[in-house]
Every structure is written in C-alpha cells, then in structure tokens.
Length: 575
Ligand code: TEU
View: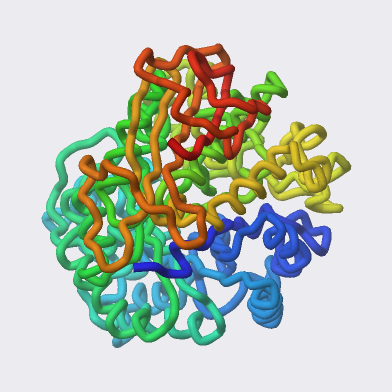
C-alpha cells in the first residue's frame, strides 16, 4: 500500500546540536525554525525531532521529566507551536520522539512512586533485594549502559529497575495506568500537530519475568524483556486506541532486534508499528555491540542488506543517527583525502537512496560531517562512553586501545554541533558550544556547499529528487546482483502493478512494465567501498546499458565496463 510516509524523506534533528539562537551554546527551537528552509531545500518533508521535553538532560533529553512541556533550554511551548506551523507552511511534517520505556527519576510519577503515593506505587518496577536482603540486587540484569540495572532507593526502601542510566527508571507496563498515560501523551502531541513518533527502545517495554538472565558481557537479562508477547499487545492497544485515529506513522527503535521479531513488529496486518530501526547493516565491521571493531567486508554488507530488504515488507533506511558514528568515517573514506571523503560521502548517499524503504538522514550527513576530532575523554560528554571507558579500565585494557575504541564508537561523534560555516562557532553558536565543534568545520560546512551542485549537499539534493520521481526507487523490489572484493551491485525492479500480486523475490524476471510517469524500469547500482580501483566480476557486462549513467559520483559518462574507480558509485538504468 502506498503512503506519504513511504514516499517521504525524514530528516533527523538533534535539537541541542542543530542551531543555537540565543548564544547559550545549546541548539534550540527558534534555531530550528530559522533553518527550516535548509531542510526544505534538501528535499526532506518529514522532521524527526529528538526529545525537546523538560529534562534534567543527563542523556540529552532521553530522560524526560515532563512529556507535556518544553525544556526551557530549548524554548517554550509557543516556540514549538510556531515550529509546527512554520514546518507546515513548507510542506514539512514533524514526528516526535516517544521515550516511554523509562522516564527521568525527576518525573513526578517517579517521585510519587518512591513515596508510595496511592495510585503511583506500581508505576515503576520495584523489588526488595534478593531473598529480601537490601545488599543484593533482585536479579543479575545489567543495563544498556553497562552498569547494574538496579539501584537502591533509600526513601522507598526498595530497588528500581533501569535498563539505561540510574536516572532513567523503567516504567511498569504490567500496570494498565501506565499504558493510559502513554495514550494521553500520544494524543497530546498528535492534537498539537505531530504526524507520528519515533519510538525509543520500543521493544523493551514489557518485562515478562524478573528472573536472572543468561550472562552476557554487554547486557544480561534480554530474554526476559526484549520483544515479549506483552510488548506486542501494548503496541496493538496504542495503535487501536490512538494512532489509527490520526494520519500518522510510527518507526520503532528496536534494540538488538532480529529479523523474525522485526517482521512481527512491523507487519502491516498485525497493526503494531509501521517500520523499525534495526542495527544489523551498521554492524558489518563490529564484533561486540558498537565497540569492538572487525574488518569491513562489502559482500557482508550486501548480504545483510539483502536479508532485511527482502525480509521486511517495509524498511526504515538509515546510516546515521545520534547514537552512531558518522557514516563517512564509518563505512566511507573519512576526511584525510578530500577527494575520497567527497566521493565516499556521495557513494553512501547512493546506497541509502537506492534502498527500499523510508530514508532517514541525520543532520550533517548531507554535508558529509565526520567523526569528532577530540583528543581525550575530557572532551567527551556522553555517559555511555564514560561507562564504557570505566568498564574497559576494569578489564585492564591499555589506555591507547580504550581511546581507539571510544573514538570509533562514541555517540558524541554524531552530536558535535552542526557545521553551518567555517567561521567561529561554525555558525552554530555565538557562545561557548555545549559540546566541542569539530575542527573539520573549516572545510566541511553548509555555507561552502549550499550553492554548489557538485558538492556532497548538491549530490544529496539530486538523489532525493531522483527518488521522489521514481516509482521503482520508492516502491520497487530489491535484488542483489554480485559482490566482488570491495564492489557490490544490486538492482531495483519496478513494483508489481496494482491489482496483481507482487512476484515473490527471485522470480521476477521478464521485462517489467514502465510506470505511467515513465520513471519506472530497472535501476542498477554499482558501488566500490575502497580507495582502490576495483575489478568487476567477469560476468558483468556493460553492453546492455545503452544510456549514460543516471547518476555518478565520478563524472562518468558511459557505463563502467571492467572496473570501478576508487569510491565510485554509479546508477544505471535501462537494460
Ligand atoms: O537508544 C537505545 C539503544 O538501543 C541503543 O542503540 C543505545 O544507543 C545505547 O547506546 C546502547 O548502546 C535510545 C536512544 O537512541 C539513546 O540516545 C538513548 O540514550 C537510549 O535510548 C535511552 O533512552
């Protein structure tokens, strides 16, 4: 089924780091409003706003103390209403970040719960210590932030569960009142003008049991709380009672999800979520979670893409977000060689915009922003990186290795302020930025690219237009062609015409019909993930592609025959 949220392109804004308007060094809502034209010019038509709610800010807003008010650091509710209005004028819808696995410990529900105020006793997950002893936590679970998942609360005289930081206590979804609260929050924002939600760790809501978990060096206990039947049920209730009554969509951030669970969560017929963020395609070069690296193999990336592209009815396609390293530093060439930096940033744009699904662009991705250039832990703010460092110290890992892994994986890589210009404060702030500005802003910035069609930004604009005009790129099927060394190739084939069932994967041969707009037909994508000229397989024949490439990051005017240039990406059409 077609939908606006399938055709649209989402632009993720991390408010603290996007644009400061009052010189306090923190990005804010008026700042976002002043940059809406840049989002519109890119061609994005949906904004995902990372949390803007009242929050003590220990996890930059993912610790909410009031879901119905705006963090004074970021602005006011009047600013928020103005943002909805100004975005609408430009044809941009806004989705909010729904963070309801946990609240801040400063939320009034938690304060009431600690005091056992009637009605609030069971809003959170409280337990006495093991065997009734206060010194031993109720079970062996650990948190996503690599600490114990339980903290003792003196006032209540019990432990509470937190799958993240101790200032982020988990809500108790066995309590129907909690579900009602969430319904209220959804309605509140939908009525104010939101068009949907990105749902934070939405597959961990329901804790089926609080038994000990199987030991895992990253996180223990998941078999008791990830993708449980109770979780599916809650999502169906929210959909039935609220979301289905609005023109909106949801994308779930689903931690550690596998394909089978992702299918259940996003299956249109089950009416839970519309799509999910999974992590598999970003972990080709990661051994343990995001932290321990291994060698990148393009063939492995293609294999994983294939699995999810064809495994799910609809994908959320992304390469970056506020928790990930910058993709040009991750799968691309980094910034050392300016030509390869630019080419690989464009190659990654080709990858993202030729996959099947709703594309999500994270702020700065479209200008090729790179990982931070910090030199030590003193500059890092992210609590996760600090916990990781502590854990690695405990394991006696040498300082150099610790720093190497943190540099590669820290969430602050994505959180340095947006690079609007080469000037002081990068055009982000006139004050002292809350997090260091990457020195690369002198070369990599919006100003330098905004009017240059040959820039990374210019390339993004082109490829967004290409996708917008093509039924095949939006709705067509994905088909892997080959992987050879650093090169991969795949096709997008036109969607099955309405009224006829889609051909199942693997048997869609024969000449597919052009769609009415004339933008159908097969697209073939070739990518070289390396700084070396690379050979295409012998079976590759350029001959059938009579026409010039639809898009190329090297200026190529004829289809490649035997080789691809370093970091070359090319889209061909017609066969
Ligand atoms: O992230 C949850 C999550 O599952 C992980 O990807 C997360 O990045 C964590 O670092 C595990 O290594 C979401 C948000 O995206 C993240 O920013 C928040 O810190 C977290 O939830 C808690 O709200």
